[in-house]
Image (cartoon, rainbow, N blue to C red; front, side):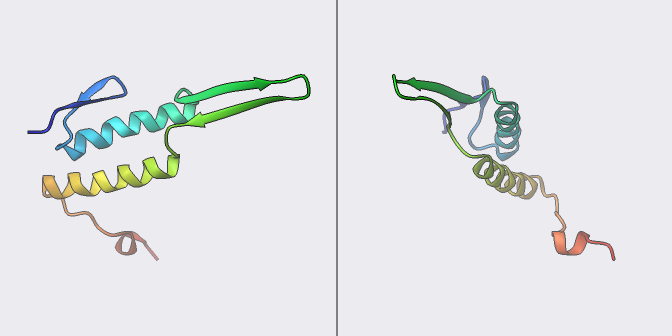
Length: 89
């Protein structure tokens, strides 16, 4: 049995890809808003430098959310059409 984890303050079951995707979307929105970014300032007599750090990149979050969405669709029995077939000419 997998222990639930806290993501963005919400308790999420690691075995539920739908819940994980939803929780990571909330994390992504916080990152876009700048809330999940740590900022530090280094100052010396010669220079002043500001550094921003994030725990993960938006690209990594997007890839994981996409993977979890596919797993959620498979778990739910939903057939997703590939992008190639969804284009209209």
